[in-house]
Structures are given as structure tokens and as C-alpha cells.
Amino acid sequence: MVPDDLKSRWSLRIKGDRSNLEEFLRPDTMVDHVHYDSDKTRDGREYFLRRVRSHLTGRHVLVMDDIQDNLVFREYTERQPHFHVFPVRGQVHRRHGLRPAGRRASL
Image (cartoon, rainbow, N blue to C red; front, top):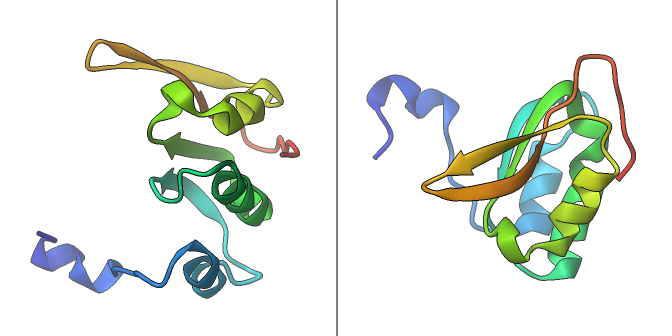
């Protein structure tokens, strides 16, 4: 599953978003890439975005699955000054937040 040379930098957390994010997001933690494929409820998605917001770098990449029916992601990206659209397997994934360095946006 995980190549031997990457195992020291990889871990599987299964306690749920609220517990796991507290372990990952210490006050000095900054994140360049985050892939969310978890709680599909509005509340779960909004919690995640609120919780990671202050930890995202100016050039972060945010990936969320199932965005075709994800109004939370659509609303988030509409408030971002920059984003890119990427086609995936014949479908267009509406927006992936990608901002230039030094720019911050509120969720």
C-alpha cells in the first residue's frame, strides 16, 4: 500500500475529523495540500473548512471529492479570489482553491 520509503511520513487516522484534525493542526502547522474525502454532510464540510482555514498556505491546493453536489465547496470557492478548474475523467470538477502566495481569504 504505502511504499517503504514513504512510511515514516505517512499515518492512517481513523478517529474522525474532529479528533484527527486536533492532532494534525497544531498552532504552528501550515498546509500546502489538503484532500478532503470524509463527512459528506454540510456541517462536516463546513467544520473542516473552518478548522483548516488558518493553517492553509497562500499557495495551498484544496481537493474535495464529490463536488458535483457539494454546495459548501461551491460557496467556498466563490469567495476565493483565485481558483482553477480541472477536468477529471470527462467531468469538470468545478473549482479547486489555488491562490497565489501571500493572499488569504476567509471561509
